[in-house]
Image (cartoon, rainbow over the protein chains, first blue to last red):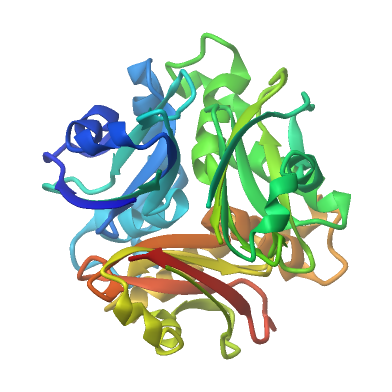
Length: 140
Length: 140
Length: 140
């Protein structure tokens, strides 16, 4: 069984955001999968997806702090791709470090994540807008 | 054909560790797959998985050195998520940089890796304990 | 339906390179897949794959600049794995940060990427040579 769905996420501020439930709400068919995987892909190059801690919101704000210092906007002077401002090239870099897709196991009709895991949208732009993702679930 | 298995890895020290054979030992059914993929997912947010060099142990120790300098524990003063100590937030960050899962091709009953490739467990905590992974193999 | 193919990419200079079309040219069978995914895996530990911007070549050169500063060859003095020169250990590190595989959705016979997305080969070695990838497509 293959299920594929395009989902538009609601717009979010720059930063790291838990989106596990927003995805699950769009996937009622997941209940039919006893074992398989879900591939979640973001169709943008200035936002990314990752799996991390689902409980303490300071993990998300500390992630934003870390990546802003590791990929500083003050480096804009070294870059040529700067047409859209200081958060343009840095967003592309962060997107490749974190990745444009994640794959998680599906077991007994749910994402088989660890107790403390959730799916993050990593919004790297100041004004990213609504982001489009494509979810592909395989399983039986 | 879909095969899904939860595996508990033996506890390892902080650092980068080759686990290709520990996974393969738990997957005798892999021999039945002539072409497909294996998805390996770690159910934790302070350890990660990656594919890298399988021969020289200094690659693994140099990786540990690099990530300790790139994501330094002395940054703890900038973070809010520090309840579990200096290796808490840094482990979450490293986990997202490296990723919580890998997917490798399966061909003629084995992981179809390059000659010099192996699967690493990246243990970011000082006391990570036994880590749980979920392996999902598709193929025919 | 499962399709698996080994492809040898033409050799490229150190840097980030768009390879979407080189892969597509080798996958005429993709047209038969109405929904599924394509997993692209590189069988090397000193080059990597990522998805990023497909239009402006300065994104690729700025990525190369960023990673050379984030993983500097002057750090060679800290490393033990240096037999093949200053670009040896740094290439392994970059490969794990960026990742050895990507998975993209396939819809109506094509890679279902965003308008501005393409697949990059990230060549981290000065003399990487021809790189081997394994593509596995699932779908119906």
